[in-house]
Image (tube, rainbow, N blue to C red; front, side, top):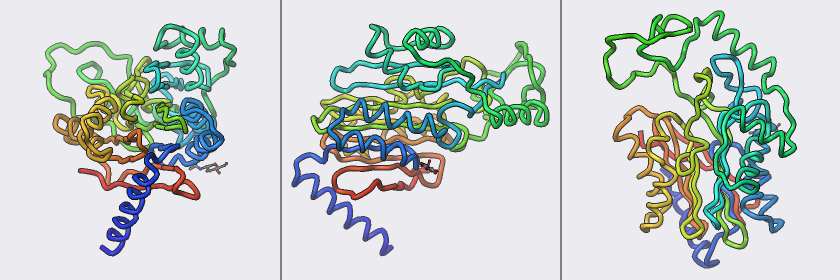
Amino acid sequence: MKYIFFIGLLNIFLIGQAICDDKNIPIAITTWWFYNATIKAWDVLKEGGTALDAIEQGATVCEVQQCDGTVGYGGSPDEDGETTLDALIMDGKTMNVGAVGALRRIKSAISVARHVMERTKHSFLVGELATQFAVQMGFKEEPLTTQQSKQMWMKWHNEDNCQPNFWMNVKPDPSKYCGPYSTLDNFRRESPASNVKVDRYNHDTIGMVAIDGNGDVAAGTSTNGARFKIPGRIGDSPIPGSGAYADNSVGGAAATGDGDVMLRFLPSFLAVEEMRRGATPTDAARTAVLRIAAHYEDFMGAVVALKNDGQYGAACHGMDTFPFVVQDNTKESFRVETVQCLK
Ligand SMILES: *[C@@H]1O[C@H](CO)[C@@H](O)[C@H](O)[C@H]1NC(C)=O
């Protein structure tokens, strides 16, 4: 109780600061405890770098360090044992977007996404053809499989009978057997009770939002997707408005969690639009999370929201608590903050 009171005081102090200084910028905010990414983003921002550079370089740290095994190479093998990457970067100044999905054999997914944004008139490239684009842009082609990801896949395939997996209404019974599967006639069309345990080591992403000294907002994500996904699957992370969204006139948001469900609700877009309507970042994030929970009461996910004045907040669902990392001028060093989840 005392502790909560103390945090309350701290918040009042911080909000007071933000109002005195007009805007609490620059600032960087990152999902989960991926503080190395935040440190990098902050280094860029405090040297006067752009929000876009902060996002790209921050997320790259996670791609190199393989944050939690859920970002970058060597994690989350698909059903064929291959790691593929999804990433998004969004410029809130121009409303331009670059994204890649199911990117194969290239480690720097967010940088390829930035090349899509800055060197093409497209927004989104996928699969083998995104790899060809990346190679043309000078990226190195190399396997994303590691000893660890190979072992993870071998255990799943050879010892665990391909459990868990993402199939339904196919034969042989996917809850017991490996594929290949074929369609099952006479199945019941009802909402699936997933046999896939959703946790932070399975459905996880780095999502970042940053505001630079000029007040420009950028957001981005990078992930290797869901473990043992069906090859070709893309989740919420690279989808603009779902994994992340940025608009200079309001702020930005990023989301993480059960991507197959979350992408149906564009939670990052919704959080930004709620802030546009005057909601605080915390309330905006809550609204985005509750919209999903109204339809999927057990879904696991979180949204972080950052207003263009530097106020921020987060909301989560399906876990006890959700950590996120913030750094701005009011802090000597990055700070991991934690929110209590709504359910
Ligand atoms: C941060 O980076 C250091 C190495 O530079 C590493 O030892 C540490 O595990 C990283 N922390 C996280 C949370 O990834």
